[in-house]
Length: 541
Figure 1 (cartoon, rainbow, N blue to C red):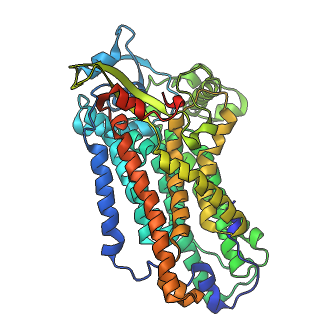
Figure 2: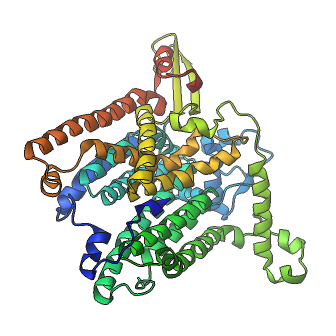
Figure 3: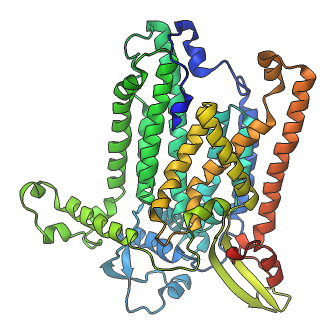
């Protein structure tokens, strides 16, 4: 996919290798740290305030928090997820009321790895299990940090602090991301590790090109081109992708796509400096190393996430290997690993067979238009209850993406495809890789019980797609247009002003749309008619 960044093959003189690989400068060249950091930190602080404001409301387990909040606490107590005590009739009510140890002594059959639940457990450990703020602290923190990170990612990709801050604003006011930053489900943690891995691979791309440019300037191209050396940023990305898989198995697809993406970036770099067998060179010089730094590292990280299960005696299927001795070559595999493999086989069977109807299940075709958002929480209220001043009120939490952003995102996605196919824009290809790894795999499971809120994993790439579009609308910096493109000063300034108005209007519309839906993101008690006005489509109810 990212191969379309490749420049025409040729043998550049060593002096222009740096220009071919790194460009000739950008809006952020020589920029002060205050200009590059302070606006982004302000936006992050605003987004964080919104996410932490009244985070403990409602003080009850919301949607799938019934699983993950309790499982996180079980991990804190026992190192593994234990099943609810069958003698307790209403464990959720007991848990919420301040008696959190609702567990029996048997391991629970859970179908998601433990990383996300360990992350939830951090907040429970810090603030106490009786605090619903503590239940959701980690999700809110990760949601806030991802605002900062998307801003830095966009700045690096587009070489523009303005576009970086724009990306942060759009994510800060994105409804699906916001709701899941205030709810202890797993998907926001998966989103985080995917975004971290993407950012690390972007840094690796820049560093690798810098080193390749220096090597070519010193030694020339020659054969397969110079070796780049150890890739520490790529190794860190492997750890992040292993943690992503340790939240949910769907991280495996992202690992595969990002691995291909980073090697194709290397192929593009070698082709740009004139390596003739550029693809073979990238496979041999870079691909083998990329595989080692990504796949085995991710696998090792994933296995490390199961340490609590390995150390336990009561985790689900923990003793299966000892109870079912293997013969032949299989006997060489430790019982613990065979037990874990058997556990994974059972979990996989559960996942692929999950087709029980649910009122809010949604086909992935509808996700990009937010056709069927997930209702996490809904209570009807009557006059005098929780501040209701009319006959009927609603109190809801709906995981609805900011509609303006998602609908503009459809246009942005079409532009990405065009720019990737015809303009060889590596940034378009990189963003599409995010869609490919986090969205497209769901189409093979259309028969399953799946939900729109899974889309939070690729929300950062929706934001980047829109920012890419807004960058095209905004146009180049006037000084760049004048110096490099021969455009007149007045024409360049006018182009920038018009673009700024149009791009700014989109951003303002996204923020205003988010504000309109605020009550149904945060369980505010509002008149039923006010709730109904926010259900723009019948499928949202």
